[in-house]
Length: 376
Image (tube, rainbow, N blue to C red; front, top):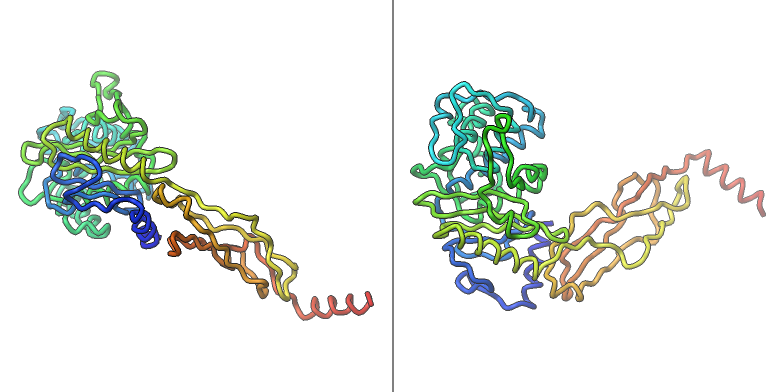
């Protein structure tokens, strides 16, 4: 599906002026930026593979691994996490954990997502892997699995460390994976203000786009003096989910402005389309089946991201056989809906049997033939 989507985007861009990395259709002051869809398709890019420090945007991977462990049942949101002396010693953004202090996994995730707490990121990493070092090995392994070839992690929180680098493109990949496979994380990344420690500690989100850009769902900000201002900003509008990654901005305002410009351009030029047939799907006759007809339905599909300029040019061709031979299994592919743009196929959706049809037994064949003879 990703290759097909890439083809659709390429075709759609024929209707829009072609932009190089140095001539984007929107103004982006940051040296490196990417606009990407949830399936990893890049819509805009400015030096997207430049290797740079990510600062606290690192925590997207920390959250991804935590979510994977939670969804797999390895840990629970209600599990207790005890802060080590090492975790409590982290500088930068933090909630000032004390050695031996206990918070739940959920509270740790909330503090990481909302206030970018370095101490909580390390404490959670130790809880999930036994040590930050072991957790970082998991981070790098997962990065390789996701195709993040520009990335090497050294710590779980993003504090400046030699060799701790990634790229805007790689951040887009891991951000898309987090949002696509674990959408519940937005329950935390969209919190503007909350508290922990029974109200004693107030948390206010570092992502100011939550207040200025409609539809923002997160995701993570970052800053160090050497990395500059960075953000992985996700948003949803009319079913379309986009991620704008900004790296190396010179201040918070420009970081937010660049992310908003990319998102606005994406929503203005692309749409998420759930495809259907132009006419009802009629049952297909079954040869030698216990039923004469088998009902069919379109296979499950994710919305397709297509250029708005090309939507009026979509052509849908239904490819179905005149008959099928029994037996037919429920869910068996019997045909396809071919979706084309300017003559090129951009998507192919399977047409499936919505129920099974068994093959006639010898006795059923004999009995059916006997009935035909009696009716003459």
